[in-house]
Length: 165
Image 1 (tube, helix red, strand yellow):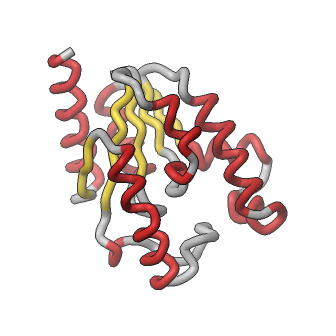
Image 2 (cartoon, helix red, strand yellow):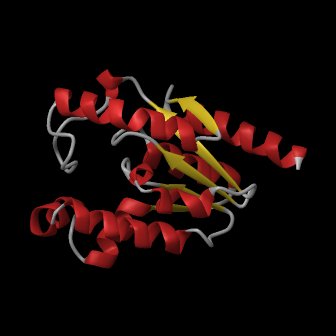
Image 3 (cartoon, one colour):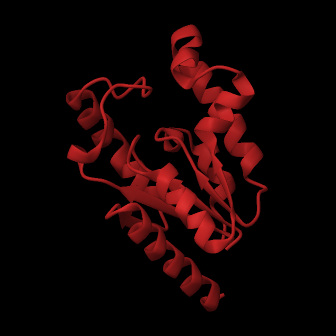
């Protein structure tokens, strides 16, 4: 695998699992949310407040396109990355494994630095809208059963795919 793209709801564990997975595979780890903040010089919450969701989505698209050429990388994408087909198109190849990290709704966080996760009801509505898109883009679906356990499971899947190539 040239790269593993982790998708899923906000606070499903993509960053923690991705960090662990990258260590196991000796890959580079990229968190697109952190990359967006570095490039913008402000937090995602501040981007939403100052410029709105549309401006954030533009930054996210630019970030996803710039990460598409990475190799030997685990990329943790923002929860809404699947809302724009142009974000996912560069990752629809045999060199990329897209993994949907699922987590029970009770385990997802509300509020904090997540501007769209304002309440349980908003989170549930967001999940229902996004679930079919996560399913469409995912090569694999993995439940978050704990950071190291989930990372080891994905690493085994990656190794199996590499043997099949």
